[in-house]
Length: 204
Image (cartoon, rainbow, N blue to C red):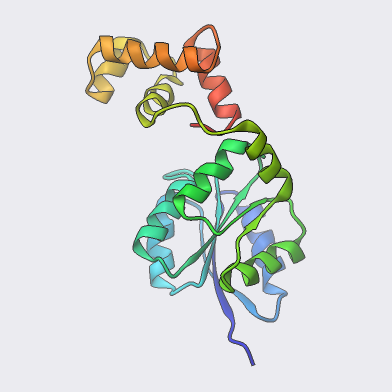
């Protein structure tokens, strides 16, 4: 008899998390042994419960599912990582794969598909939603550098260049240059549009 697959479920919406846990719990070979609502709780929970597979929602407080995936991949390389998203943003797929994810699926996929993905990643396979894969290929790579992304993320709340410079420990001129380059790369008119486009494509 095959052993039970120990699963960690990370999802900040309790109703969604409980529904996923209940559906996966119906599978004979899968047990949800831990549930967390924050991205910054994933690593400790994965370690404490000796999980085989972590299912991570992208949008969580504390840390995103992609950031949590990167932490687990570095610290617990034996744990398989399945990233779930509500938004089919091409940039998310690329970022998730770079972080070490083994699977990338939309959250409203049928329960049987999710359970099958858990089994497949444990067997060493990669599972990617085909529609998202096609969109990511069509979109191409994220044109923004890490610094440009950092400055755009910080600018999302409407901070002035002076405030950004203080927060990021950069000069005002450097902040202005990063913003200008990002705006130019994204072919938009201002920082607000740059933030909007980069978010929409999953590049932040």
